[in-house]
Length: 387
Image (cartoon, rainbow, N blue to C red; front, side, top):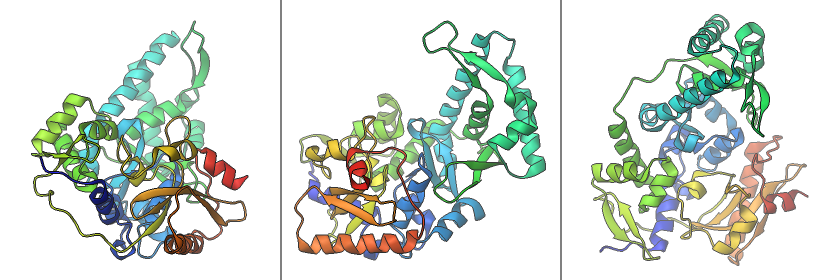
């Protein structure tokens, strides 16, 4: 069986994820496509991940792609997580993942309405949705709070998990809005605050045309292998949130071939992707919490030492801000209250590497300006660096 080494995997990561300086791009859309999807649970991550890969980092081109020409789309999709993908890829992600997520969200909420016992049902939900959409059509954009003021139904409260330990009273506005967004009938527009804010305005949108889920899964697997291969079945299953059977069928549909990895596991690559690639120039990067290059695989041992996990991950398995050198995670970083980026190396990487990290920290300071970024998911090392 053909073998692809860990060193070659790190070379591919640096090249395909546009992390080597000579491979950076001017286009936020090209960044998103290079990593397939940008994690967007934390609004700042989208900007930090993108700017780390732009030849000229800045907020304006990312905002233009998200809110101006809308060439980047936020979708609740893989693993029931919010991602940003290119408009070209969005229909594929909708059919392969987002549509199933939306259906689950709707079923769950309808069950909560039924359990509440006050006669709220699917007809009531449809009416609440139509009123919300009519309000957005009239106003253009509105925050969740503004929608609740304008739409009486969104001010409704229900009892969830009645008779159980988790029983509580909740408003329905966020759930109705979440369903509409998951189905593509509304989308997130500019936030109320700065680019680091997650308090978005909402605007109406059109759902993506229906596509065959199996074909969409094959297309997504194809793109993922181009960016993250070689990788295992378990990696693809984890990243997409699919069942193992779905992952295997998608790999078969694209003609993926087996290779042997350094740890002895079987990895998969596209048939034309067997040959080694030349190493780019030495590179350093300061990547944010939940960056795709850290979150793209279930097994990250080829670029992450097991001894670093405790410092860099929170208790839920979310990775924090990381320092990279030539395809390895070698430390973590944070931004202090005064704006200064600080980092701690967890590996001995030498003087040249340290100088390259210094240069990346300076680059970060220049484009981020007066903004202050605190990760939504805080890790032990990030907390220590900002204490």
